[in-house]
Image (cartoon, rainbow, N blue to C red):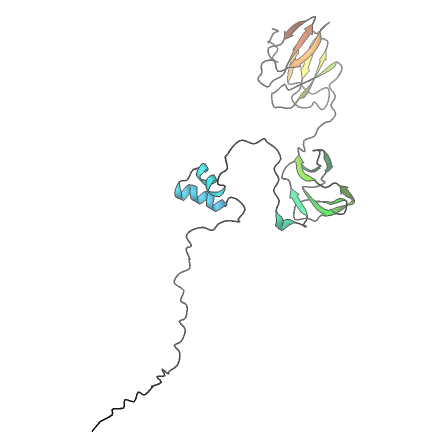
Length: 258
């Protein structure tokens, strides 16, 4: 007799039930988060932190840093020309600049001053045919537009010294002379009356002001000359006639001619 064994395989569907576990709540460990490393910067040339970090943290030389950011370039000297930087995010926006000393001025493409600011700050806004110029005490404003458009395709804001370039002084009768008597880089006034010389470091406001230097030197028949003969920044007088130079050693009354 033959027996048949039939194996029956039951497919069991196993289901794991139950609720999902609750998400863990974040816990603050301290008030400080330390981030180490650095980013790649702005993507346009050298990263400021990267250059600093490589120098301080890794001891890289300037040549190594330059090669890392600008591979294949060679460092060298360049002329002291005007360098321009274009900031794309500022396209279409007014240009505002403030000077802390002196006066703000506009300079055209030919390096000529075209306008002087009435305050410490200037604002340039591009418009058809040129720029609208506005003045203000500071960059915070308030700005006051000037009525006329400043022509040109390129203008830059710079500064000039606000020191007075002139004035009036009364030095009395005689021949006026000009020289840097105290070596401060500014030319001052003097007067020669006969053989009497009077020189002032500042001013004078009137002819009765006491001179800083007074001495006698008769220029009769000779040409009065003034110069920094000693190369020390201080001008002293001299006389010239028929190819002969007589130069005064200093400005004290006892100083003689050489």
